[in-house]
Length: 79
Image (cartoon, rainbow, N blue to C red; front, side, top):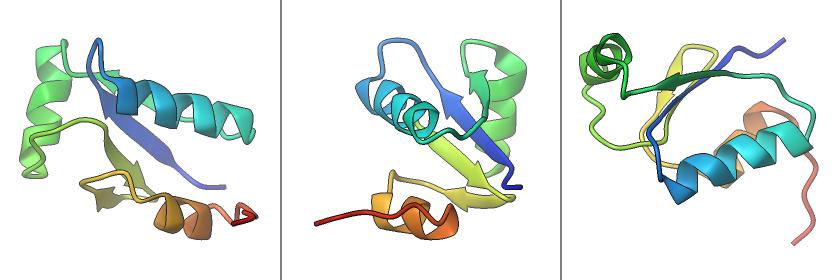
């Protein structure tokens, strides 16, 4: 099982995209909206300053890298 945590904020199209993508592929994730100061501080502790900030099995992703996400989650893609 893969642990997925997504730090998000309101009105963030890339945040919505990645949440919808993971849901469509059947993955569960924990969302931490940085409107909550505790979650904002957690994200900053990783030196992350933009959303979505993703932790895949504890490994930080500072930008949405679909190839890496698909590889780590073993999602088949067609190009």
